[in-house]
Length: 130
Picture 1 (spheres, helix red, strand yellow):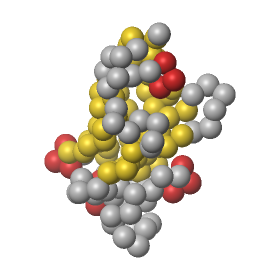
Picture 2: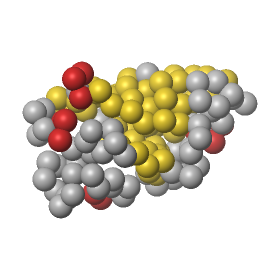
Picture 3: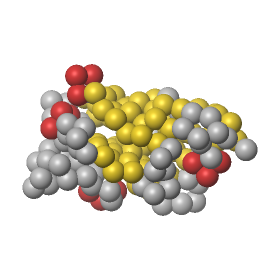
């Protein structure tokens, strides 16, 4: 079982930056990939970024590539999302997510679909004003 708690959201002007954090509990954190998703009002949950268990591999959605960076600190059981050059269209609730340990054959697989994740945080609101 993994419990996830996001923090760091808020209101920021276009062009600004925010850093989201996700604190994870559970003994399997350091062995699983982690992901960030977001959901804007009236829209489906959208993949943002994923990182493998040891940070050797990351994957970012085209919409955020070059502006957002996912990272993790296994010693702190935490995953982060650094968001730069924010745009009004980045406004959404951001969710941290984790798959069940052992779900995928390869520990380096980077899941990008919501159905590939088993545990979700409660979300943190990010609002970007124009």
